[in-house]
Image (cartoon, rainbow, N blue to C red; front, side, top):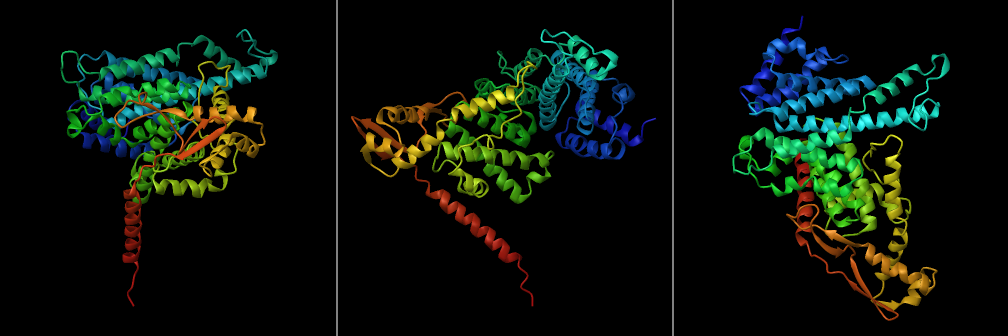
Length: 502
């Protein structure tokens, strides 16, 4: 026997998906009612199986698949998923995506935030499975159960029986969370929203699936360490940025993406990490700076605290400030990052900005995963980043000296570095070459741009003489005045709030 409140909710949610298809109504059911019922009845236990509520939705196969994903997502959030739970998760998403991809006519509606949550969780569970599997394999090797050739030898006396069982399950279920199948589903969902060759309109749900599958695909590529592919995955969003989607008040693709803040944050964070790992420091600074300004304002107004998942926003904000501290140190770019964000970066990391030569503490990267459980891909990516930073302290020192002169001899500059001219010359040339990077212009795809030197000084070698010019500075007087107006507004608001009654 199910509570009436529960059966009523299932019926209403089904109606909003298949019949009424009203965004405001579905938002209430998905964001508010589901949470309230969960807290009341299912705080520490799973929701009923799809078969138990099938009569409330006429056994609609796609709705049952959607319901199964929603309730499975809840259960993995409140419990510690076992290997069996993770295997079941693969079947949950496979069933749902097959239902979506095989539908001839999408006579249903899922709001953008719901679709993003499904695809975001799909990648999250793939990431969790890879980490769980790597830990399991490492434990098996430690206890001598998993042999170098991949065979499993159970120890005598029934020791570590649970470990042996889990390793056997993995060996017999190699298709579960197979990376090629994960990529296949995301790519097929992206294609659902592609413009039709005959010019026919694309169904809104297919457009949403395409937009947020691109976001999920970008995140997945970043987690696997393919940074170029991470940026390439966002190309459909850029090329269709102004395409109008009929539902949601005829919003464009960009407006739909921005309507789900978690999706916007995912795009900014993973694109910025990819830019940084590809040594495109200015693009990384611009991307992180823009989203941090938005979040800073959202925290002040309280707007972000009202959104689902707001407890994670502060953590992500701190990670991005840490990355910005690295970028400010590597590639100072006056005028590129808003002063309000730079102030916060200096307050949090200012004492380390000038002195540090150790970047690992600041490298707040995603939790990289490997499809090969024998490889520690996280350390591999961190080491790749640190290797690129090996010459950065010497470059920072060189830049600080160059800013003091308009011209000086190579011999003299080499002495400042306690080096001979022959040893110093490669550093002088390589520093400028290392700071040559692709820089994206407004409206370009993430892989396009022009090659520029990301230095705030310009220097060149003529004979034995180094000539130094200030880089052309972009004068942005409006930033100063806007920031002062904002500060004045805050002061006036505080003054007005003061109780002056005697």
